[in-house]
Image (cartoon, helix red, strand yellow):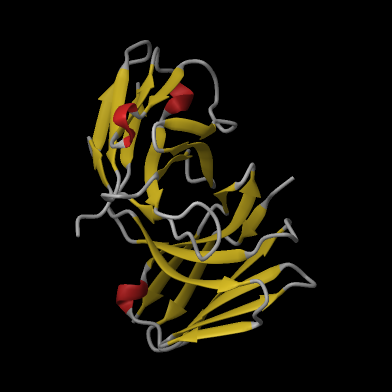
Length: 113
Length: 116
């Protein structure tokens, strides 16, 4: 079945890089997403990557995709205190002509001075 | 443009009571989804509407949950009677496209349901 796994917690120092990892099981997933949830807020789409890409860069964010290992990572350069949040990895599952998202449990990123 | 809105933001009820959650999607979005996150676990898919029709309700936990989207605009999710294990955060999302493209789902802030 479809499953997405993430480590639950990551602590980094302000200014360092953060790397959040995710593994997924559905090799037919066409899109993979990273969502961010700040305290008291909803899910904000951070970035996504299409399955025929290995890497996508968007300002401080770099997404790496290893399709062979079904491994996705999100790197945040120069991590700031405002980056403290829960980060959810999600794969898009195609079912009956429509899409639904399969999420991981989320990685809580704590940024300390 | 207004985003996805959900009401209430937080609901506290007793076991056995009924609660109705509401979601207003982004205007013009035909697709509306409900998801739930229980006890810090993964966010799980509940169901998907295309306009007023239920396209996929494979994630609905049991028949105590009833979702509607009359008129294809806003949606309600009713839990009757609520049980302790129904506590969690209920997210609503909407997207404009059927298939193809990114079909990005835009999420609301969620409703935190606490069943005592």
